[in-house]
Amino acid sequence: MCGTGSTGRITTDLSRVLESEGHQCCIAYGRGAALAGYDTIKIGSKRDVYYHVLYTRVGDRTGFASRQATEKFIEKIKAYNPDVIHLHNLHGYYINIDILFHYLASTDKPVVWTLHDCWAFTGHCAYFDYVNCNKWETGCFKCPQKMKYPASFVLDRSKENYTDKRELFTSVEKMIIVTPSDWLAALVRNSFLGVYPVQVIRNGIDLDMFSPTESNFRKRYGIGDKIMVLGVASGWDFRKGYQFFPEIADRLGEKYQVVLVGMTERQKSHLPKKIVGITRTNNVRELAGIYTAANVYVNPTLEDNFPTTNLEALACGTPVITFRTGGSAESIDETCGAAVEKGDIRALISQIHRLSSDPVIRNKCIKRARIFSKENMNSEYSELYKNMI
Image (cartoon, rainbow, N blue to C red; front, side, top):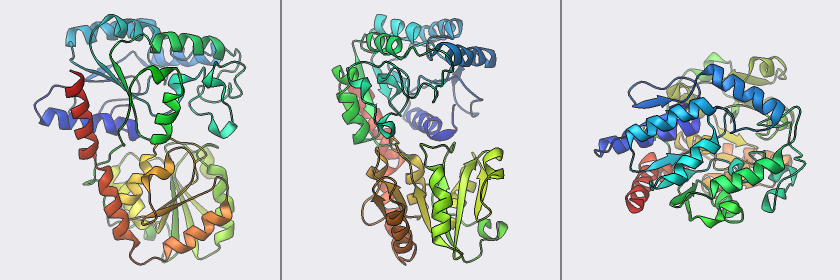
């Protein structure tokens, strides 16, 4: 999506900065509606997306539908004639990777591909560490996560997907892979994409938007003077650690209030009364107010790349506690948060007690967040584009 969600905001932030430097940018996207004020191309339609979803649910071939939509998109790329093509997430039921990469292999244009998960080098899944699967290193088959995103309810074609992806994704002559975390960079170098240079560029956020922000959030939800423990996700599931929060709330007791942002209405209806559930918001100032109201931000993800929610919390002065999984812990140090072993709720609770009582930690968090400004990220990408051209 263009301008919403972490990846969407990264693309619009980058576009805005490049245009301010005198460059031309066009953002192509396949889902939702684009924010106003940007030059954009919509790939396909809702009908195309629905068919692609059906194609995936039955045939396990995400990335191999949307043929007509992708052919039309390629014609628009040719007409626009960019100097650099920058790819982000290619899963999401909107584009045909076969057609796209045959075009990329046929042109001499340099390609930057920022990976936000592991889908590009597996036969099916976006993440695999938390189920201890290493088939992607040599060749996927009999996927243990066939029913997980992007779910297939009938066929398992992970072996075919892996073979086709390897052939397609290694066919481009001039391409650089970018990852936001050292963790993902190491995985990419150990995959078939390791034939390309890999560069780490940290995700960046807008520090003007994500900063300490006054709000009436505590009053509105009756939190009062309780110690507020916050969790935020664009969608809560097992991998994001949703299942840990009831136990966290039980162990903390009445002096604490757990708040989860990004819940569905169904999830909210099943929450224990001691947890406040809020649906997803794309209002950045509202979200900044919620981060600021919290005493500590907890991210019990079982596997993630480089979560921007960690950065957003730090920028609003809120310390971060996360499991030592994926690249999640790479955004913090001992001054502004803590990383504990995966699933160690006792250690996590101990860190909540410690960090929520630190009277000077908010300033330390804000200082740490300056490393992850969108200006730093955009500067690194701009330099990369210039070097490739």
